[in-house]
Amino acid sequence: MKKTLLICLLGLLCLPTSTTTAQVADSPGADFLHRSVPQVSPDPGDSHRGGAIRPDTLPEQNGLVDHSGQGQKSAGSSASGVGFFTLKGEISAHPSDTLDLVYELVQRELDPYYGLMDIQKDSISLQKGSFYAGTSRKQTFLLRLPINEPFARFNLYAKDVPLLQNIWVQPGDSLIVHWNLSKQQLHFSGPAAAHVRVQRQLKEIALGESEGRNPVMIIPNAAVMLNTQEKKTEYNAVLESYVPAWNRKLELLETETMRIERAENLFSSRISHPVFVELERYSDVLKAPLHQWLKIYWTGVFQNSALKFVKACRPKNHDWAEVILGHGLDVSGLLPEDLSGILPFEFAESLLMENILLESLTPVSFLHLTASIPGPLRDQVNSLYLIREHKDLPNADSLFSRVLSESRVLWIGAQLEVIRKSVLKGSDFSPHGFIGTSGNRVFPEEWKGKIVLIDYWLSGCGACQDFAENTFLPLMREFETQEDLLFVTISGDRNEERWKKSLASGKYTTPQSINLYSGGSSHPSLRQTFIRAFPAQMLLDREGKILQAGEFPKNLEGWIRLIQSYLPKESSLKTVGESNKTLSVSTTDTLLK
Image (spheres, one colour):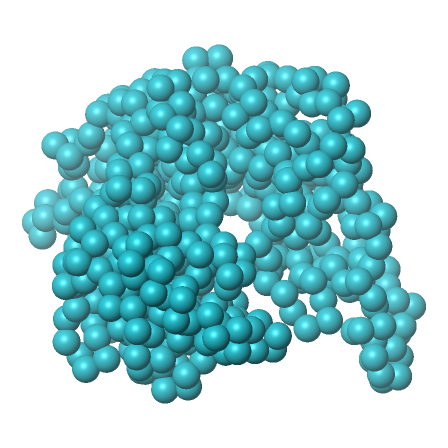
């Protein structure tokens, strides 16, 4: 169903709208390179991508893993406890080869970025094949994994190299994997083999189309890039030799018109994408539910790609709203009639991005924009919105209450309640310890009795350096005599030596603050407080509870006023009276740099 409500509101787009900008990485001379991402931790989270690990192991004798005792009933699912996925492997390899096979079965993906999903992951023990079973000189395995949802995402890795990735399986599916390591051949047999072959073919088509698309650079002036005669000559040679569908050229998108045209092409290509043409060819091979699921999944993948480009363009006028509205997802007729569970994350994320962009371009709130989405999917999209945006929402607590009261999917509601209790004002800060500069363990309980400002940073992060130079360090100078206030920095680095080198550089912090090492965003405290992008800040009260986790001031003066508001009145008055001169000299100089 098209957002007819918004079409009526397009005439109001001249009204003042949100100035929210896309969080993209700036590069010298260019606003954005397509496919660039915000500065985030290189740590993908725990090795199990943040979900709950289940102790799935292979018996040494019979080789059969049966997880029937571990299947968890899915609240709100339309197919709770419905069956198993059986995977058999026959591997031809030299006895000296180290295989290190690992599998993942992912269900109920609310937000993989923050590890909000159900996941089974474990290594696979191999057994010697049998002459009588036709597997002599081979190594074999057999898994039987419970699936509590209509579909689950399956991955199979060998030494971190994917053999199967993002393959959708259903309860009752059985698959045999034949892998010849020396010949680098991978084949499939068994009842679900045809389904897997089709999915791999769709992935190949999508990858080929993506690789053949021209790269782009969003740049205000091409002369910034082509600033020498040598570069101009090379670029012109590429343009002259360019043949569509044969080679590629870098498109320099200098104007809004050029960017909108590119976005229109991306949206239009989704409709006629070769993946959907190929998918229709196999409509008789695939079961109807799988065919529909794959259509939903790939629709989300391609729509997401187009919307990420739009976000990178930092849209600000009504022309962009018209583009998004004209190519918005029409979910009617695409979704299952008995929808009651969670759809592919890619599809939900595309609806999230679409409506966040529209919220920034129109006078309509996000929850009003999503009101027409069918109930369970609306729960999924609205929850994603709160998970991703809660730190910057002025009324986050009331929005959590509203979405929780309307939620129909119990599992989603339970996840939101956990998040609400972990990150909103008044929540207990995670008690987990960190490593100090001397190698000692430092625990947050040691900070009780003081107001604490925490700055999360990452080595190599330009925005982290900017915050330190223009805000964090000036704040330390401003409140250096304030005994009721602690300054703490927590690094998201995975490498301790790199953290120590960054400390020594003085670009991110100073020895006068409490400087701590987390070991990466998989640290329990960072996971609990949803710290994945850097820099990030948090204020704690004297009882170790969260005072503020978002909506922070944009300038130094605002930060000073904010911190003063949390300090005892006598301390605040002392700071104001005694540091006016310091502020007028040191912090003003900092701001003018």
